[in-house]
Each structure stands twice: as structure tokens, then as C-alpha cells.
Length: 103
Image (cartoon, helix red, strand yellow):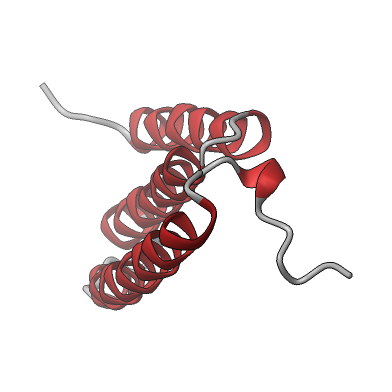
């Protein structure tokens, strides 16, 4: 049984839509960060799928995927550090109540 590119793209589409829904509708900052990670993973699936099934198959998409995973890990570390600092000051992780930059 072989898996076609449409299967990869369908999984990536579903994953991206779930992440987009979570990022736009949820108010918990941790859930928003996780939703953004889901969207990045959907992009990674697309990169690997097009790398495997492209006109000229190569490892370029896989290398880009490793790079984006590294950037995503750094983004999560910085995001969680900011959330911990905000939680210590405001005692909430609700996105609507985090308005320290507003006047």
C-alpha cells in the first residue's frame, strides 16, 4: 500500500485548520502557542511531502523541516518564558487580560 501526496496534504490541511481554529478562538495563551505549533507542523508535513513527491525528489524539504523545527523549539522556549513571567505578574494566562503594553 502506497501513500499518495493527497493523503499527506489532507492530513496537513486538517492539522492546519485545527491549529488555526485554536489560535483564533481560544483565550488561554498556552493553547494558542500549541495551536501555532500545530500549524507549523502542518507546514512541515507539506515540506516533506513535496520533497518526496516533487518533480525532482530531494532532501531539501527535509532540511527545511529540520530548520523550522529548530526555530519552533526556540519559539516555544521564548514564548513559555514570557508566559511564565506574565503569569507571575498578572496571575492569569488569559490572552484578553494581558494588556500591559497598552496605555
